[in-house]
Length: 235
Image 1 (cartoon, rainbow, N blue to C red):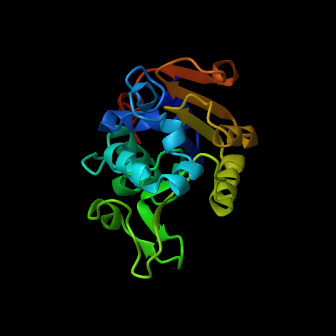
Image 2 (tube, one colour):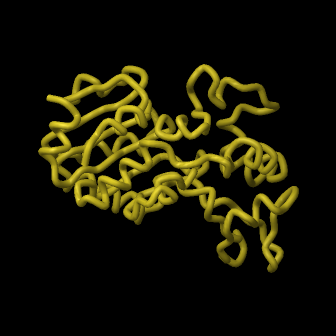
């Protein structure tokens, strides 16, 4: 059975994506040979993207964050656009993403559960006021609110928990879909990767460059680029 066959036979598709969905937009992933984890900084990326580091070395955090985590030049690729098309056609009910780049929304997807937050949302840690991304890119050093509080990106750092409402929405979507497409993720980042266990539907599909631990659980495994693969689908 081909991916086209599965999509033709599906009415409630959920797409669960990771960093590999955005690499075709020029956004680096973390764990590949040229990913962030293999680049040289004064501190390991995992440490710089931790809650403790944000609190203790806020200025250093923002140097790395502005340099590597904000990619405003990136545009939605064929994967993002095809998913938005599938949603408009009534085939896709939700996108669940581990990415923080906001490209699914930019492509036109309406129901998007951003498990790890978004660089486009920021808030004051003191008064709670929300800010757009301009508050980060148009400031230097540590961005501050008009009340004097520190502005923090609305992204989930290491040592922080996922947003309950976002997780519940994602779980509900996955539990009620007939097809789950997992793409561009190594399935090693928890608790996000654990959400797959809620899938009880008909078809489990994986699209990924490399093999993962769930290959043998899938009805269809495609080793390749996510955008190139989805672009071949007709809706």
